[in-house]
Length: 406
Image (cartoon, rainbow, N blue to C red; front, side, top):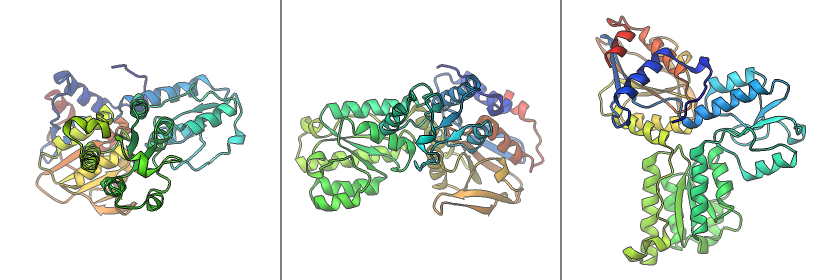
């Protein structure tokens, strides 16, 4: 796989050694068991896969290369390049400006842009409408494009489904940048509708079976369907794709459910299934799959708590939090600064959508802690969190000693 030039501020000597030790012994990435670092008073179990993925490293490299090569130009990003506060803060400190927030709200008017400005497309990609807007201003929307190749793969898959006469059901978060971009590209070739979760898929099924009226459809899915979408016609033949950072099990569950509903509705025989439901493979990216599988393997072990590191608006990170929460107390933090001291930690509550302060480490003879992070979290942030946790314990072994034994 291609290697990228990443700024030193995002690298970690410790995390780098851990990843290299595991990679050396498991080049085919078949072993998803966690890395275990036993310091005596505390045992840290680190997920096999975590941190910067291919798409993020590609985006980071292009972003910093753009800054270095355009010192004489104004540099804008359409929105946050990736969902990590440390990375975006560093970009802003170098004079970069964001044109929109993560919800697509305009921060800087398009009229302020000039043809010689450098405009960087984030890793999530962007909509065709925004590409056209940039082109109308004399700006090449592809010159500084960091769109993840795996996102583009979904766009291509949706296009192929549309060309075969199916409508596209997109499993994703409607307000997420990637879903908005995929929706924009998909609707060029096929009637497209976004479903957020299995609850919305169940609701959509009622329109496949004509249980609910066409008029009600436009109310229930307002803002989530392409122009001219007709549920009575466009739900006769469907295919499912997804935002690349969704939970694989959720996407599969939605696809299986909708397939069952549409097959029963048409009373299709096994040989006729593909006539109504596109035979389509999962469109999650490899990193999302690896990180989720590594988290499942991590959770096969016993621990007192889990710490998941990443941006609060990071979709792939939030799903790792959800997996961990099903088994044990989980703290979703952005950096080592979220750990206030041994007793208190400031973490994000996914359900309340706010930061809260919780009790952290209880007094125990031995504490077992699970640790992982999302695909947009720098290794340097993971190292800082690891070292902050270790600072609260009287350890009997050095970290380099444990890494050498991996």
